[in-house]
Amino acid sequence: MNRMKSYIIAILLITVAGCKSTPQQDDSGLALRKSTPIQLFMGTCVVGRQSPSALEDSAQRKGFKVAPKDIAQSYLQYNEGKAWYLTNNEGSFGLALLKSNLCSVYIHQGNPAIIQASMESWLPPAGSGFTYKKELISQSGTLTTTSYTLYQGSNLLEKWLLTVNNAAPTNLVAIMSYQGA
Image (cartoon, rainbow, N blue to C red; front, side, top):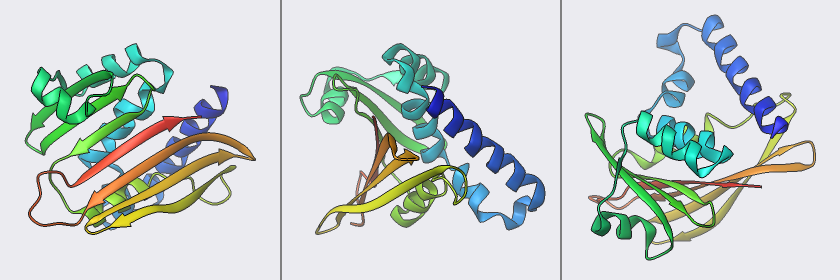
């Protein structure tokens, strides 16, 4: 738990330091880090790693509502867990927490390449004491799944998964998932 706090603090310090040294209009990384999909992912799944109740509280603060049974089943795929949905001026999103503690944010609009760049903008920079391994898990038709495994030294911290759908048009563009160590 302390390693994760250290990781989040390091990322926040690097983000803040980067903001002060680079004008906002020139910092495409800042725009990527502030995008709604990644903010929902970081603000629910990553923050909620402490406990399911922390995730539920965070989801409510972000504006998610408990999903009705039909919507919940589309996110849970008949697995045990809880599901929420959010519709705002940025679009439509889903959130699912499986009993296995896998947490996922479902993104129904946007550009898959920008969503992937947004997730990668949160990966630890070189020299931060944290590392990651990026791995292509699968590629089939228009779907691509990439895994990002985060480490502090040789200790596994967590894993982020991103599945993007490059089909156009589509009603599901990406799924960002979080699995703790």
